[in-house]
Image (tube, rainbow, N blue to C red):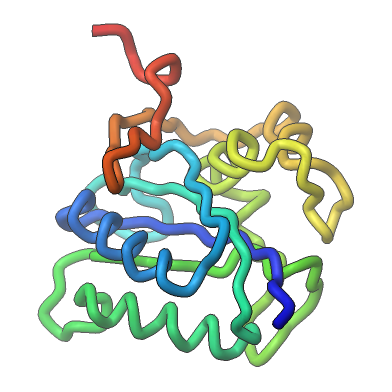
Length: 175
């Protein structure tokens, strides 16, 4: 069974810690070699809502892209994403990259355009996989972040999952 490298973006603006941890727990069952970026808080982009917590994960999956996307939708649904009375976005999980695919695949555009537009995606990628290449522009995430001119503020936040601190202390503001 071959494993495909993937990058996923996670975000939440309702009970942020609860939903991000639930999403990570569910992903741990379908993603091997899973590594997490630091967690950042940012203001909402594109919707009127409270601030978000965001992070990126890197790993490998045996799932074909359509099945991975389908299972991500189930994880979102389990966390209230599609509830008719929801007041925000409990959990959003996006496929940012699936191997080096470039193009549209069953309506899923890869690599995800938000990588180059949103600091809450590009900054975690630059920290987690700085030398990995964006397959569309053939430049590393570290280089793309250093040269980015994105007018968006991010605040690193302390966040633990399964006993591990995801955001290193040197990123956090001094007490």
